[in-house]
Image (tube, rainbow, N blue to C red):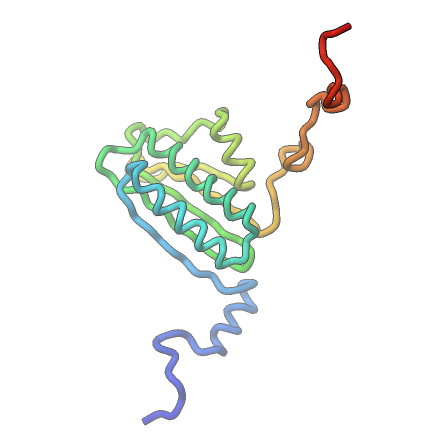
Length: 178
């Protein structure tokens, strides 16, 4: 009997070190197939949060990614063939999560990029692309990097611009008594 500890079918540490050196880190792929119905999006939101936490994403990044995946699915489910499947593939690399969501579409058309929903999606995920494939399959691909927030060219998150805060009446003053 070989005294070398078993890796349980996993690659040896030499192979893993080599793979890490050449690719910039290990990559895990998690694929889920669910019915193309909004009732199942909770499963994807939960999986998204769990996988992002595994990559040490911040709580804000985890929530952004959960909402982004939910929004991508909602955009695709509008035109999904009834009774079809929604496929979601998560590719995990050190500090980066790629998400690919695909459905069989009634019309084979990509979601419009001129909508509020698309703007929200880009703000939450950063890198977002849509594509079509064989058999009227439509996909949305997201990429989120740990600690990197999407920049829409505006002030930082939480900053309220143009609120008129400097012109507000201080508490205790009466309004409209002049």
